[in-house]
Image 1 (cartoon, rainbow, N blue to C red):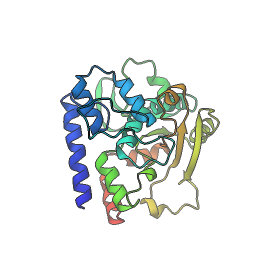
Image 2: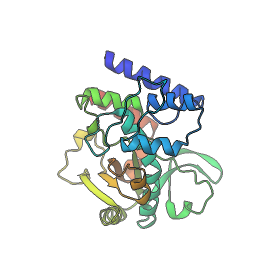
Image 3: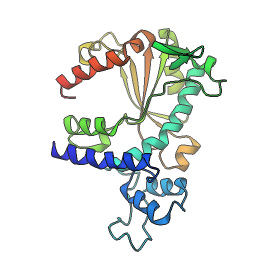
Length: 267
């Protein structure tokens, strides 16, 4: 519990600094670096060097700064590094799910329809949204730091490498045949490496483990030109393929009930 509290305090401070425009990236060392240099170094330059594990401090007034970051090819054990990768990969994954949805009648949750806020969970095909200047899609956010710490302490014995859903997105389908089509599209995408598939639509799956909820979940790596250039192509993302009937259950009240179920199981 004391570890959880101390880590939460650390990241709360980071978020506050970010809100004030004083924080670049996800490492406290990078925040000091940017303060000393008055933002003279570009964000991309800092991110690439931190993500590769080869960033070295050449600032004499930062003696506490480590000489190198962790090599991205090794087993990751830094939550800072994992989150930096996740936030960079978030943009890459959004582009991929849009392409996959377009090829399979996929939908995304939206916040507005016909200029009015959506009161109930509402979904629209990407083919109908893609030409809008600012499509009102409610994209999945990078997993909160507090939830990641909770999961590390409850389930993963503080092994950061087991967090494989920090960067995640979902595609919604009105027909199972479309969901299956999307699965085939993803599996045959040459820029995707499939690491794990959890088919909770299988009739043999014990749905009591997920409070009755079902979907198809994939853990993947994405090897686009951008992800390779940023050295984040080893980052593991989560993709959920969900039938619309189950997606409707994932509204605010439904998620609150699931959190209670999860807490009961200490997950």
